[in-house]
Length: 358
Image (cartoon, rainbow, N blue to C red; front, side):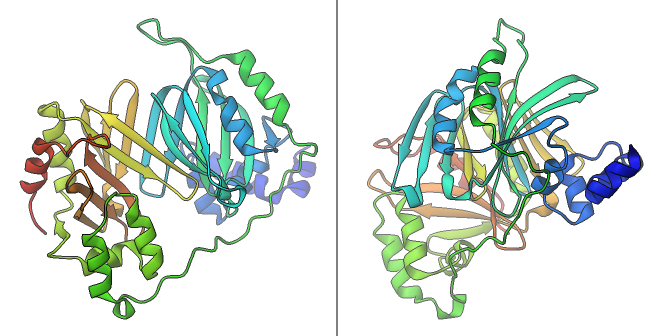
């Protein structure tokens, strides 16, 4: 049997060998060590404990409230957000080519379906029991989002709806179940070198923003990388702070019961936390928020720079803390909790102003 498995899937054989050598490695880390994507590795388990999913992803996300209380996980290379709760209000927006969704409730996300390429349902036996999930990946095989079923929890917290999960998987099971995926490179809109950006025009448009969402359009219009724009605005709308300020900011927000917002994700999904935080812990390179229904895990060693970024709006200036990696990719954003039509919390501004400059 082993010879047959090896001849059919050399990748699976290599993964099995790696797991024997390093049994604690997660699938994402195994994929990196083997030089493949996570989706390629997971596909080798199709027919064993994994099912390929296919169909209209907008219809799949509309069905997620049926699952009841789940854990939603969204991540990038350096930051993971995890929320426990039900999917509630889901709204689809935009034309088919740029379809997106907003999810509001205990689990809050912004979904960009252009990056939803591969889907799987996973039923994996682990030392802690059966782990069941729906996992979505982009065209490069990178995880976009994962939704895990939960057992009933303390305080009469309900578990996930197993019957709804089985029906959802059955309704979206792909007609064929190949054990390989054809990944492709991600093509991002090109940006121009920072030296070629019209700085004066950029800052003038920045000054006249009415909404934080105008920022994305401004970056596209000027074909400027986000971090490059922040650098160009240094001293006017931005300034750099120490990387260690992130821990101090979170600890202060927790101690003073200051509600904050946390945004982190990838091309396909941005997950958002809104509210007070409680338990801040550092473990090795990870800066963590470990609350009952919300976890954040941030790789501090992958944070290259941290900036305070200010955006004018109709409700006054909105102040963000933005962390970037060495590839100029934004890792995570923090804000004081606010709603449209309501000015930013003064206590948040005071906290940000107290953070050490880099």
